Image (cartoon, rainbow, N blue to C red; front, side, top):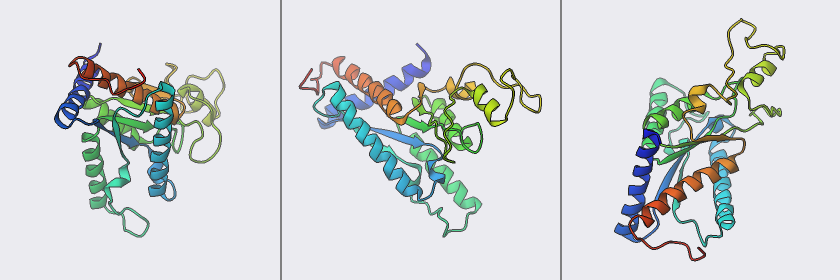
Length: 239
């Protein structure tokens, strides 16, 4: 078992124990929603739609588990929740850029896990800002659950989750190619992204629903371990 898993597990377990015994209610886990969704039209509405999808998937997860309710509350943190005015009506500048950066760092520091949209963005690679955020969360020992949307933002279906095959298709290379048109080697490890992304996350799934389910399974496991290890009552009537 890795150090990363141990540290994140202890952190989340302590939160659950403190919340239950100090307040007698469900713990609240904060989830940072990373991804290039903020670049879409009406990004605030996009963020609300994303949160609503996660809530719907969470409700379905509860039904699938045959629980009475979600055993913990979710605080979904979207980058634009910081209320920094970066709309078309404002003039972008370096101070605004720094404010957005600092606000996002603050939200990640205050979050327990991350859901990351790692779809390819403006090419075969994922959004570089999201890549940084995935690395940041990994660096502070917090779990990341990634999803790879196979329909990129430009609308064309691009159902290729293998990095090598994706580069070859986008650069119109031969099937046998392991180098790009500039004779630079292409990573060929069977990963979705660069190995430093794939190897730093808990898992990468194709769909948001699967990533949400994986995240909820993880949080539920950590919560249940914290309760059972301290003889606390189970929050589920149907178990």
